[in-house]
Length: 325
Image (cartoon, rainbow, N blue to C red; front, side, top):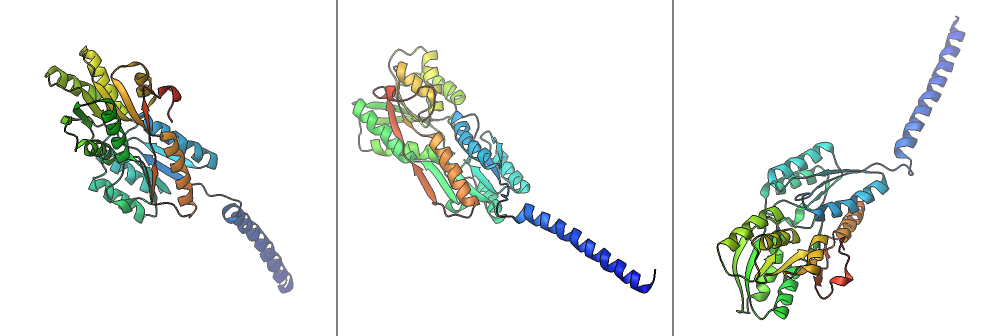
């Protein structure tokens, strides 16, 4: 091959190589940078416990939205353990999720606080749902029920219905939402001496923990006629304990949630008096909306408060007994 032929060969070869490389780059650019091509987001959720249907319903609304967008949802259960939830947040960071939805096991936990700060430094957006974190800047957006007002509502209905009360509180000291409900209830009754808080039991908002504790309290013979439970699960445990002890004297039970089980008991159990209903459906849909606003660079409210509604024997027929609000 002479010099001229050799030169033409290389010119032709380089031209073809340029065409091939151009086609590859064009294809890559189309697949990765074309305006119509959507990137896939990954969202991680860690709620206080999945042993509470409230969180399952909330997560279902988010899952539906994630599925419609063609994105990924990673759901974890810390089972009321702070260290487990911290580990899950660390795993989300390693997974390089785009956003974390959290209902903290303990809103006062510095371990959870540090884990969320680490996530924020990694560029991960945070949505705090249901029960608040003490450090407000840990989350881009907080979505909660008006928990203090829920307690106020129960207390006002109690005073309307009963001339006096000797009250046992069922609490969860680690959850700020539970603290707010009990505070709203207790503060409303403070100036009314006929309504006395006698004692409180730590139940972590779980039926299986409330049942034996209330049962033991009843066995000890301490006289009370009213229970304020931080949530319906604790209230259900109390109702089961009362039935197990064959208590014939009425014990009025007030709570917060509006769960199907509690609504069913309000309709037929003399002791189940009222529940201030939350809406995990609305909370989940709001969470989904705020998540996608954050993921797409839009502004969100720092805090979203979802109103409650009082459910009693007088208006129970207006509500479904088989589903949430």
